[in-house]
Amino acid sequence: MALGTRFRSFLLLVMVLCLSVVPVVNAQDSTPAGGFSTDENAACADSRLRVRDLKSIDDTIEPGVKRATEEAQQWQKDSRLYTLRLGCPLFVTGVKWEGVFFSESAQAFYETDTGLVDPVEVDPKLIPTLAPDRFRMSLVYDALITYGFTDDLLLTAAGGVTIKTNTPQMPFGPPTTEAGSVYAHIAVEQQDVVIDVWISMTDYSVHVYTPSS
Image (cartoon, rainbow, N blue to C red; front, side, top):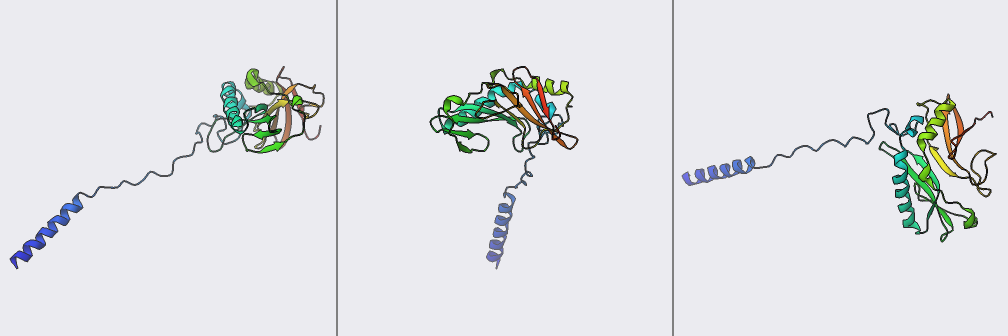
């Protein structure tokens, strides 16, 4: 009996020692917070562009175009920029530039934001290449404010800003726009009305069209 008692005591001691060295597992952190900024003045703070977001983003154009170009050239090495688009990325603050690129070898357009490939039958010589190195969104902002728009006005969710060249084959801009002119198109929501705004990227003049005009 004495031996049996000592054996049981030994087993109890081993169990106590084993339990004492079991590591404590901490609970995992909760789901990471989203990328939206708590700063209401941050660009795309609520996943929508506002007029004020155009004021201080000139330094995003070059890296944005570079990233979009690298993506397009993975599709076709001869891709060249035809249209530039500005919008809000998903789930994070800050603006994002996307592009529509033309490839002569594929005879098609490629959209970096959607991955859509759209065949085109226009003569490649008639499809201009967009050169955004001199574009200034700060001047677009100034033009909008001078015209009478306010900082807090939203741009339409699907619209953002679209910049491209007007051509006879693919018109873009006000009715009186000359061929070869580059315009930015912005759709502004004001008092439950969507206003189409065309801004020349040469002299930053403003042309406004409302549903009643």
